[in-house]
Image (cartoon, rainbow, N blue to C red; front, side, top):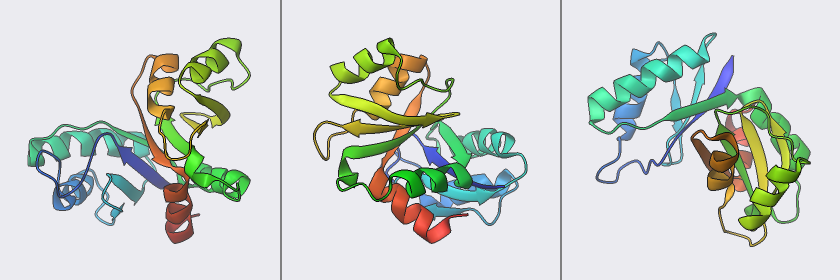
Length: 173
């Protein structure tokens, strides 16, 4: 399966963050020697029939190699591609964030979810297993991660829709 992983809070090449070499070596240790990084934000494209195991092993390997533990969340490239096909032509892509999380599917029409998002000046516009697409009220602001973490009680990490569009254009299924 063609997959994409998002590492939380990574700025490759900066002090206190795993390096690109550490990330790629960690994925190689996890059985994915052909993994590729995308941009410098901890986004990794890889192929595996057991992506959850790969990500768990890569997390440990990257922490051991770099001394910097970071959580990694993943989804299929197919899911990312579907989001881009459905929402990529929006006139204001900078207002949108694609967020991976470890919780259940978020019901974008649920009153509690709507209220939490509104408190953070955003709205959940689409969701699937382990992901949500959030529209921020103000272009360039990012509220998806804290909203999804509050709703699920679990960690989340986001990438802007323009980044997701570039990712799918380059590596999509």
